[in-house]
Length: 341
Image (cartoon, rainbow, N blue to C red; front, side, top):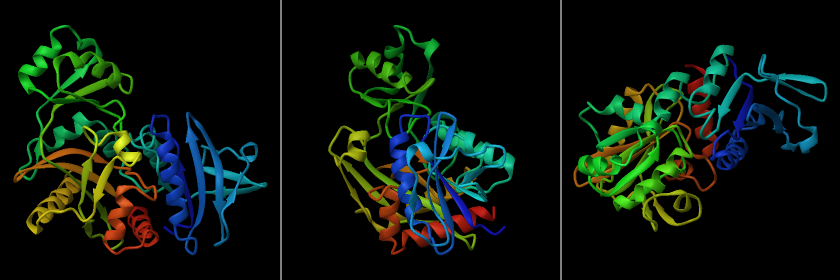
């Protein structure tokens, strides 16, 4: 179908909503205005409003807060000065729920509107760290760290001892369905579990306790081009000043993000090929970022991000620039590929 009117959806119902807004505004600014009309939709807790738009190659028009029309969810449209605009494509930039866990994708699928991310099912499955790891635990091209899955009603006085017996120390305690490292704690002593569980359960209903695999943190993004070819972007290496790549390290400059990573050609090929295989096995679409730990010659899967950050300083834009691509051209490729799926 011919894609012209693109709604960039940002904001979310999760702790990541402010990061999502930055990603969405940057993405909207980089979409080719010579090809597309772009409409920015702020969506949070069921209220979807038009924040700004650019039509016919014109300048961005930002609306005052009290003049922002609500999106009609019956047909995914909006009224601008009495003129109805029906969107024919959605570029979803909602980190966390409802954009990253499949709810937004399910809505768009029911209306038959193409969108930039994975399907509703794949989004839901990959957003849950425990479910996603179970899809990969038997493959031969990447390893998964040992873990324990915990529900709140399973918390008891013996749990910390059982975790240490099975996984040792240190471990990571993390909500299964959260991003940007919200709710994640590295526990190095058995006395730290109570606070780690409190924090993790404040972000989600279930928790994953995972052995802390030592090694180098490396990330790779994969996307399908408009010609159908699966492509891996340059690998990036994360060197955090903190205990791990937490929110502070991600967004407050407490890390080095080295692209291309300082790895051998064989290691680069290993990571890029594993990334492509994971993308295919999980049936992803759009651009996804996959995070790894390289421990010697063993590659461990950490997690997958189906709506990776897209601020000016985010990892994927750095990979795109390192590959010698323009961000505008890259987004046009993603739009072309996902509108045809």
